[in-house]
Length: 496
Image (cartoon, rainbow, N blue to C red):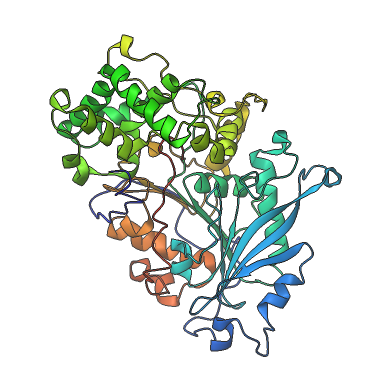
């Protein structure tokens, strides 16, 4: 199922939950809006010279430290893959530099700009995030530091933290703002939503708004009971029983299925140095199974899970687990691309721990392993519990023009960001029935309209009609089947 359910985006529209802080009114944070009802000129849309805009590529390359990797034009845009020189340490730029990969999808300098990061690698193919479609704007996307090739050499892992990454974004914004002078909105999903939030916390004057999708908020790393409560009630009892039965049966049959795993590892050259052993990797994959199903699947997929696990064949159990949580992941080869994530999870972000009350204790040898087990021992790690508490406190007290969107059936939403009395013009919405692909389009109608209206307002492109009546708000750009569908590849399950 996992390979068949890549970024499943069910647009269910039943009742969701709503959290607001402050009235949906303009705030001094907004800069002047664009003139309403006037489409951008063809010259601006195509990125060619006119009276106010010389060739956009020349302007980008005139920025100190900016260099071109490749241009990939797309109808209505110019799309550039670029390198930007960043200091390894923003506290002390004398400690060297590295090349950070970014992309710019150029619509026109007379349009707002969406600043996107996924928190991992950056796609080098044109793709439009939902806020970019809503505001019909430019899009700048950043590869997160230490994800290759945007990694200093040699890699000083102590320079991988949320403040350094936010400072990467700040420097990119400072470099591009003189060119893209209209409003900016930060966005990202999952770890990208976390990244957009951290950026706002450290540089709250940069962006005119933030749209953070499915962003986990692990304030107290050792207190994860919210996840246990989630798994006790998500979906239906029948579906939960099917999933729990397969997961348990995979542990009952551990030795037989480990033989199959060992043969596959030998055939494909997999090794297990980082996690420690094939046995640890096997259990980690199996324990990810239920989480992975709800992260990327939904109730409509429950029929793909064996109904009676005890009577299922070994191959059926293997296939079901492999389809959802993939036996290749906890190999050295599967973990290596995600070393920066697990390093951050083990130093600042935190990681979930859940329990399995339906599985006998003797069947579970290791439980949910800590991020330390997924990072090579040559890289030192020390957890800093104050990092997430600081961000959470800041959001509750100071959030301004921030929108958080979660999926009702997404495990990562069990520990969401919440708003306090100090928040202004900020919202937490939950898309009913949706998973880790939750978006504004999947919200119930009233929330969808309000969220769209606020994004347009923050971007400075809300029409007078939308300003007076948010219910009429709609995306300014039409849906594009190539630009507006997420990449079919998804990330491993137990990581945001």
